[in-house]
Amino acid sequence: MENGKWKMNNLLSSTAGIVIVGLVIGVVGALLQYAGNPPNMGICVACMERDVAGAIGLHQADKVQYLRPEIIGFILGGFLAAIAFGEFRARNGSSPALRFALGLFAMLGALVFLGCPWRALLRIAGGDANGLVGLAGLVAGIAVGSWFLRNGFEPGRAYPAKRPAGSILLLVAIAFLAMIALQPDFLRSSIEGPGSMRAPVAASLLLALAVGFLAQRSRFCTVGAFRDLFIIRSPHLFYGVLALLVAAFLANLALGQFHAGFSIAEGKPQPIAHTVHLWNFLGMALSGLCFVLAGGCPGRQLVLSGEGDGDAAVFVLGMLVGGGIAHNFAIAASPAGPGANGPAAVVIGLVFAVIMGFAMKEKMS
Amino acid sequence: VTKIIDARGLACPMPVVLVKRAIDDCVTELDILVDNEAARENILRFAASAKTAAEATAEADGEYRIRIRRDRELLIALGGG
Image (cartoon, rainbow over the protein chains, first blue to last red):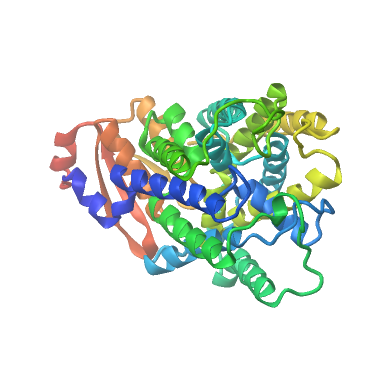
């Protein structure tokens, strides 16, 4: 038996492949910031879905409303790769409502920290030391979730579905694309704040398409990276995360986007960040726990949605609604720290996720 | 006795977690059914890192049967490899 044989089928699933994909995502993150996206937020699935939630009126925070083309690009990129390589498989039925709730709480935790796992890495690569606290929380949450997976957490089987049922988020992405083109009156759009900071639409869309495509081929996943270290001692996906970090750091240096520190106060504050370490840590711990129970980081969930996974699509919809709730209920953080109800939301989310971690055990035979 | 795991419909990372659990339980002959490419790659990668012989054969409808044997000789004797 040749170990090399199977690798030939999918070059990007090799170690070199995952490293290349990590490098590309890191550089794209830095470039999209250079091209106009908010600082240390060239890519942030959570922030961008929150902006999308604002654009369609799910919350009224007028500084974070923009129909981010990147979200559309990740879904469509995943879809195109799946079609091109015969991997589009419509399926669903693995505890969808639980996945909705996990997506919702993952979003609340991410917005208490101010970033998804990708942005946590990009914040570190831009010099924001608060990102390290968030990453530590993320890893802690993934460790707890991995313990649940090792000890029998099982959301149940998905079943093959009819193609249209696996294409719903794809249709949503196409509808969003049409809205960007037609700019209907009901679409909300920030004129100041992070929501007003944008790379050109074409750059956002095309680069995100490329990232979605590569992520589908390589199965790139920031949460899986740590989970696989914990459960199967495999560093494969972790190499991709390291590559992302290094590439974004070097690109930020080259583009003059790097400056190190914690501070959000003086001269050059860390952008879209706060220094309340406890909630940076616990917010991301909640996110990490929810992501690992749901099978992957938010970028991966978008890609899976594109390849026909209706359960991942439900998780994404949960995140979208979570983005609305985070701002409607004063949960999302600002530079002053978490929203008034942020800590309570994180604690409720942690209790919920831990109960589910214990309660969703299935006897395996 | 070959242990058979039906991991069809199980989302990542459950298929490979089930293989890991079985190997930890000292199962020496394991056949696992998966229905997607990512699970196949994961399991073969894990088997290689666990110094375990493994071979995937394509079945109908994009499904794979992956035969995992702790003992490489055993896999060859059974006609694999």
